[in-house]
Image (cartoon, rainbow, N blue to C red; front, side, top):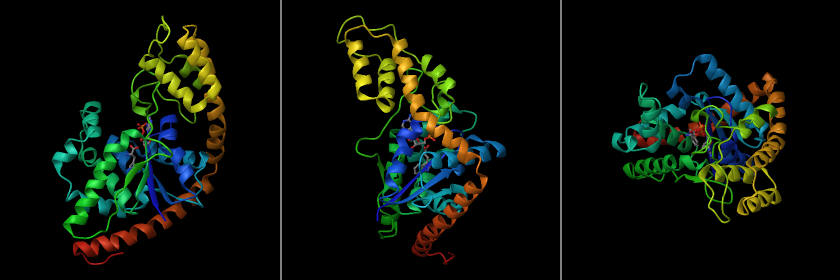
Length: 332
Ligand code: ADP
Ligand code: TRP
């Protein structure tokens, strides 16, 4: 059976980009593949969270995984740092990861810009840790958003390099995956780029947002001064609003606003009102689940413990093989 691995960093609450880029796929795949979904808390240390923020985020991401429909019976849900075998594989892969290729990685260059005072080695080797997450279970499919494409390419490079170096076929090639189509990039509300936690206040709609907050964020979303002639191409900001509508609204609603854009009668206020209501319809049941599951500490503990056990079994198998290939004594 095909093995699937993915994770989301524990840096706070999840937003619609996380959902449509990654989580939605997790839920769809869990019944047809052997799935491992983890909470990337090692990765989150690159931004130096306080212990209490870290604890909150791990619990929150776990809660939101479950609220979105990941079934802990069907898939393995675990916390990355509960599987220190990943850290060992990370160390081993780092021996064959070259500083030059790590420095050329787009996400590393972005981070240098975002946090110039904290350019730590964890940021540089972020792709190696991510490769270790994937290769520890020998996964071939990795459901992620478009921004993770380059990381997957690097994971393939590290897998192939290890195989070549030791003349083995230990690691299969992992590929980024999205159900039915190309990888997804959900736009933010600020008129530019993608929805993300670190892109500034009001840019992201969170799965835990209250109705009033969703309305406020959408009504403040960037648009433009409106089309002046029919057939005029949409500005990036307006295209973003249509893209968001495409995720949560009915086809007929989108067609209605598309038509009114094309004949220049569109009122962005009306469009945003509709978008806000459709988003609320989508998010409010998820939010209620988040609140319900978040209060069930026993359930969360049980899921983490069972997930750790299942993930450990799979990781030990890989590390046993890898240590023997390298020439180390057997430990696992
Ligand atoms: P953030 O950018 O908010 O910090 P992460 O980097 O932790 O989110 O991303 C977790 C997962 O969600 C990844 O698979 C990533 O590709 C996906 N993702 C995040 N933002 C978006 C987006 N705007 N569109 C599509 N997928 C996204
Ligand atoms: N880098 C991913 C992100 O920012 C999170 C992640 C860490 C991941 N390890 C992974 C995703 C392994 C898929 C597979 O969202």
